[in-house]
Image (tube, rainbow, N blue to C red; front, side):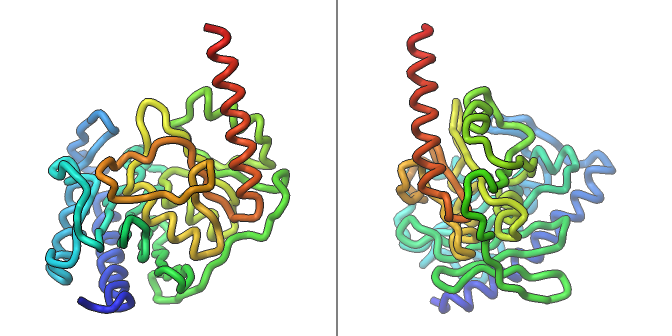
Length: 290
């Protein structure tokens, strides 16, 4: 099996290729009405989702095989009924932010993560419309590569007061419970960004500081978080459940239930504890009103 840095080089190449292919759909198929949009239970799926999924899986498997690696992707996971047994598992979102892709906000991404014993050790987040690729390996830091080949190491902001933090939020997927939480936490600014990968890119580029996810009737999936998590933590941030525990991947259930906070790390424990208190009080109030 190749060393991790050799695997990273392969994944970076695949990430760039997938990014170019996805952009061709964004600037071509949308205009030509050839996206073949299917509205499914967990959200829309397009011809671009399917094509990029096949591209990434085909190239990973042709380079690395299936003996040492398992594969979980958004478009194929329903074919799997249980936790994969391989020590190393690829977790892939070929198009994170499909709704943003369709609505042409430019804020869509590609996530490719390699997980070992349920935790990410390698991550790629490609941001096609700004032509950047973010990558990280465990213990080696986070970097961003431009189309011209320039590579820069990244680190999160040093903002250390809750009142100075900017939170990135979705334009959709926001219920009354989530809006109530944001109101009570009273961050300095809110910034609307689409894909989770694009949100985390905004944080590691020091344009924002916090992202919060609350599951409701549905929950984010492994492929929404595995790659963005490592990109953030290797840049100095934190990405945990509200109780401070780490996320686990390839657990059989791909759903990431509950509350999750991603931040620059400086107020992380405070955000988590205050969010738990606010949500607990809201739940109590809702029960008493029934």
